[in-house]
Length: 204
Image (cartoon, rainbow, N blue to C red; front, side):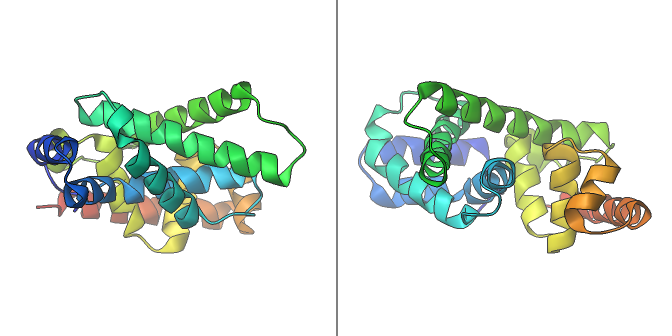
């Protein structure tokens, strides 16, 4: 469903506001890959793999369904920002659970800012490495299109691209995180980019 256009998003938004639980569920599913990718990044940064990204996203969806009446945005970008803020709250709760911090709005704000930066990094990845965006990226928010394409890659490809572009690590740090040599990481990254380009260009 990640290839639906903006008119589909607007239609689903309208139907969801009219009380359609089915439309709301379909709307949220459009962003599962996008939020899962962002959640994985936050887990690596803050939780040392003590949580599951899919579980975090599912919890965020439950909160979004309960609080959808409070969403006042009209665009896909506003919806994505709202979903990122919900995800940030779920991550903050887990950080407090595994640590000693009490509830602190500054923690939620910091995590929300990290998610925003990761989302922006997703969009820059379409340009910085000359990855040709498909026409789908002109119809949808490019970060969502890219997240859908990344989700279809082999795990190692997805990981090396996420570490390099979402977390902004240099090749030496990526190699340390992945337990590989620097040369093998550079080769893996190059192959991953090539496959990502093909997936984007093959989108209908």
